[in-house]
Length: 258
Image (cartoon, rainbow, N blue to C red; front, top):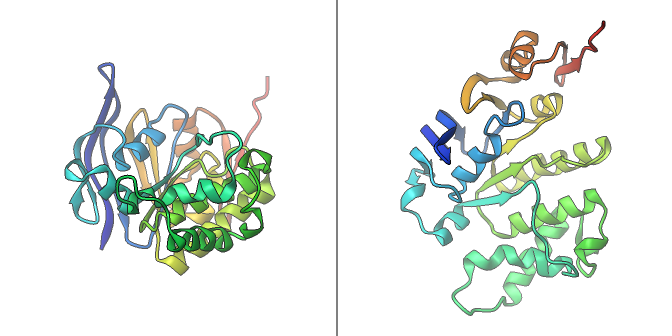
């Protein structure tokens, strides 16, 4: 079964096409990561899938066209972890995570004990239960990212969209966050669609990669087929060496010499 299906997706800003006929499939329970150089359209694609951008073509979420779904219906299907989440200063962690329950509440309805239990469970699943009473702006980068993902888990949506989930994290926290997401994917039967800059990490965690360049899909498939020296050099404009490893291809930039 396909959880996300994109067919000939087009997104334009001020008359300029940012996505140009993108096709993409994400199987239920799978992990697909979109890669590509800056400006390729990666974040735009995620926002289109999340229904927060108008898009031409077709986008289906669990076989339902995103264009006919209400914001509440989309939020019950898709949880987006943005690259730069907006978090009000001084907000407690538990209150921020509870915002993920909004899609399940009626107008003017307050969270009840069940919602608090779901939010608390999401924090515990990310080994962040001890952070519940702290304010978000006192957290480290790794702790903050766990809390942002916990809010998405509290939505109890079957599809998780991650926009550059390892940005600004050190190498230890990068693997920590991705390991947690991968474990939760199995435990909660989540479908993951992510964007990432780090090609080696992308190849290690995703089952399939989709490479975008200038809004067009230029390669797709397993990491071993997408992360080749020729493809990366051509579309990123940099010389690289690709080392095949048991965990996936390792992409190493090669310094230019004069």
